[in-house]
Amino acid sequence: MKFASSILLPVAFAASALAHGLVTQITVDGTVYKGNDANGKDPSIIRLVDTTSPVKGATNPDMNCGAGSPPPAADIGKAMPGSKLEFTWGSGFGGN
Image 1 (cartoon, rainbow, N blue to C red):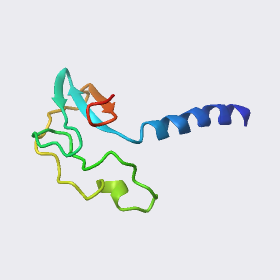
Image 2 (image 1 turned 90 degrees about the vertical axis):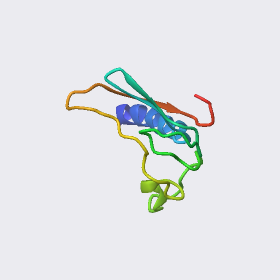
Image 3 (image 1 turned 30 degrees about the horizontal axis):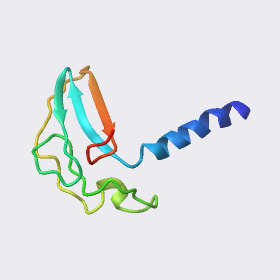
């Protein structure tokens, strides 16, 4: 049990630390697709978000679709089975 708690505690803190942000970039086989800050307007394969504030409550419908149910992404990225995908997570509003 000592081992499980020593692993779960850091993971729990990491998840809470990364919860206030958004995907800022996706790279597919070396092709970089940039996203927007919250409320951005440029076309992207990354779905826009209205806010980087946390969604509270496991039964909150915003947990699935995001606060205010923003529209789907405007563009489509091309990936094939076996493609190398990289996701860059940022704090939003220009931060890392």
